[in-house]
Amino acid sequence: MGDRVRFRPLDPDGFDTLRFPDFTFRVPADWEAYEQRLVDAFPGERAGLERCVEVLRAVASEARTRLIPGADTPTFDRWAFQPLSALFDHGELSDRPRAVLDHWSGLYAGPPSETTVMMHAGLIDHYMRGAAYPEGGGQMLPARLIQVIEAHGGEIRCLSAVERIDLDGRRAVGITLEDGTSISAPIVISNADHRRTVFDLVGSEAWDPATIEWTRRARMTLGLVCVYLVVDIELAGPNTNYFVFPTYETEGLYAGLDRGEFGDGPPFAYVAMASRKDPGNAALCPPGHTNLQIMTLAPRGHAAWGLGEDAGPYRRDDTYRQRKAEITDALVDAAESVLGPIREHIVHLETATPLSHERYTRSTGGTSYGYEHSPGQSGEHRPQHRTEIEGLWLVGANTASGHGIAGTMAGGVNCAGEILDRPLLIEMFLGTRLAEPDAIPADPAGFDPLEWSRGARLRAVRNQRAAQRHRAPA
Image (cartoon, rainbow, N blue to C red; front, side, top):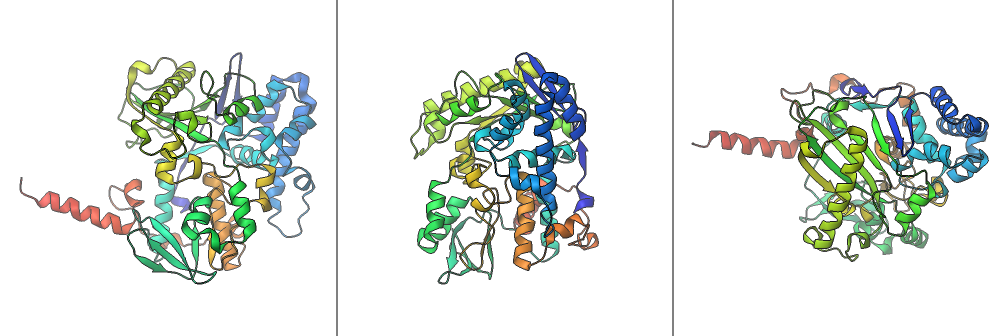
């Protein structure tokens, strides 16, 4: 698949641009340059910044080294599962450098006091080794994976919701779909939300009491609000993501959200321009336009939207619609603070709230990031790939491998490796090919990654319908 996914780098001298009320910081894609820029910005806190960056960099490096049995990982062992706030205290950092170092927290939705150093270090290291965007958009990744799966005899089924995971005693033997179809299998791997897997797809009676207790008390991360915009102008500027912060607070921003408060506006805004990252992608917007997204975090639950926990048909609720409009307006304001006037040029706008995510992805609480990455919910204290139910395995954002594209893909490889009793992740790092490129058919004419991601069965149905419409008399 590697030769079929091309990546376009963001600005290596500033792939993220942080905008505070009186300060701007550009994040370079290089550990040494990042550390030097931090020191240049806060020369009076050089020693503390160097201590923090040294630990973050070592934890990230040793996390990879730990894949080798018997490797010595002293910094990882000391710091990996400590809260990030403890590291900031170790560096004796003041609020301003803490806020800059903590800017990555929006990518896992947790405050320094409830986030492990390992999570923060891994995210920074991920970008320091190259910040890039897949040419053709994120849909290219599942499309390419599906090509590999289908070339090796696998089948992708969309629009096939699972009703339950079938058990014989305490062994998984297959699944039953909502339409009643039963599919037998010696191994079932659930990528569903962990709570839904435990309580809905399997049922409480099949699990160990400790699993039920942990799942009931586990804390989810905050949800996301995402505004999707197209404007009828080309926005010039660097290929960077913008983070707009109203304050240097770190803990305070999350404390307000934990209280169920939005306050006077969003706690921060993340602005990304897909058409700047992938120019020429006709699927994003027409020529002369710009496709962009604005995101922020939202309180847990439904109360902040004026709804009860059983939201019901929430989309027409007046309070929900008003709150959604207010947040959308505030996020557009935040985008204009870094992009200039765009409001009068909007030709497409839609907003997704945590309720939208819950409805479409069936994620508990509408979070994209799964369980909170706190010390008590990380590593061995997080769901593992193997479960106590024979033949049932777990992958996805809620497992020990973590969330995001990189985390969930690595988790899939780790899970497959455990099933096969092979160190697949190490093999991949060493360059082992798990599939021969020649086994994957060439792209058909007019290759559409979204259409390909529907799977062969649904593609065939849609193609047949299109052919019938084409043959129908005018």
